[in-house]
Image (cartoon, rainbow, N blue to C red; front, side):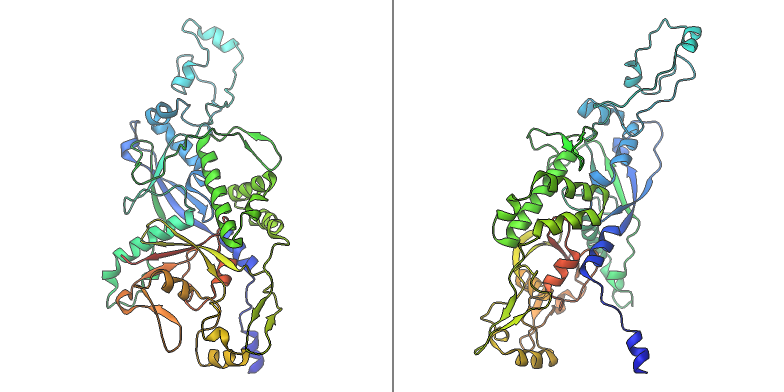
Length: 433
């Protein structure tokens, strides 16, 4: 019997495998054009697509935006004076010289009014090559169809989805009272998103133009890429600044953030564009090589005990962003161990093991410790054991990290290693209303 039980024990997954699974996981969405942005006689059909959690909406839906912009030519071409789309920039030859396939772009193709059918048939047909103007990304914004909330373009897709799912979960909590269905089982898929080309909500979203000059993008092969315009460049700058902020919190110094060379930045951004965790992990490992924190030591009254396992790469500070009810994120560094003033940290390791056996809180910082410290009205600490639990008034509270709801007893450093985003932040979503 013991052999059978041992064979059924789950094999613990490594942090790398969990991160790879997060990068590989996708969210099914249903993208539709907003009626207010329609300038065509017919409404286009909604588009189904799978997008990863660790990308941005404007990046993941680039081709779909270009496609739907052809149904809103006034918005797409009027705002930025560009052609309506680029992914369909090669035109087929018209059946007749009077047929116009591209609106204004067709008038600029060079065909004159006095060209006869015979001349047009003899002349070689030239397909229109994509140019810089055609590749310009139209100014647009996205909206959660169910709630009508504008989606913040500077946040990762997974974070936006968790926020919207949390809001929908709490909105339907009243129907779950007395029913066996749990709020976490609420079906929110496919995620319905509405695309707008007009009436940009400046009071809810950051502007899509920061006023700074837009440099040309380069890929990992140092080739200049003009196919993206200022919007994609702005999204990349947001990611870069967020990464630098996380590294500053993690190491309490700007040394690491300032040491990143241009090639590493380009490789990390290409990894986000392609959702390639292998490339990202390679650059990230090189970035933090030789900068790991010293081994952890548990101080006692006699001799200190040094933990020499695989904990030498544990950072002393964990960059965390907490978002309560969709409000701006609370950004702070979290110590992976509790302060030495705590009673548990002053005791011998044997005493710690005895207390853990009696269900006492360990000396490392848990997810519950972080939530109780930031949101004491919603998470309470049991004075007898030190463990954290959700308050009785918030029995239907929703919280998650990367779409999952880990135990409040999980170590914050383990969650950061396995579930952090490409910008090194661990995002914790909490919804109470």
